[in-house]
Length: 262
Image (cartoon, rainbow, N blue to C red; front, side, top):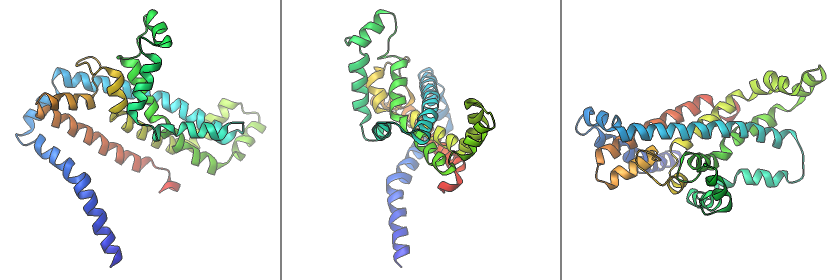
């Protein structure tokens, strides 16, 4: 009896918090048929928002993948002073508000800061341009790849890697033939999580982008801007597209999740 009661509570919670809101967006989007939905997503502003979103998310995923693999190897395979502090710093984006991240980036890379002023004096604009949006997205996605790989590296140990090095394999050869195949599933899982997080990021990007239409507007910012300008059809269409991407990412993470994590 208790099991059925818990099941009802969980399902009701998900129904009112997740299923109904998302379902209502889908119903409102196609209330007048698929034509307005297609027109909204193929407009110049929507296509540009898609393009900016993919560019920012793509760079963020690449950078976080490289950092995640290196940081995971450092945390698991090496001992050094400050190791716990480094591990805590990697998890910091999980605790800090994205809006705070955006403000911090402005203070460091804004035009009136020493670093930002020096860069802009040499023609490199960070804030209110794509590089600042990439930095903000990288920060909020920072722990995802690392935390996906670390448990797998800890479980596999380093016996095979040591054996390969004993037989004369170099560092890169050992990583490519021993380490990478062992962490491939966890790496893919972390990459998909990072991509999903990057595609849906709003807070930090909203602060550092300037929200300029057809220039620094991602899809999440497009949803807000269209809704505030009473273009609810475009807002619903873009929101539904983000929801579909989120569901696809969820399915991908289920397929890529390491077997020992299920």
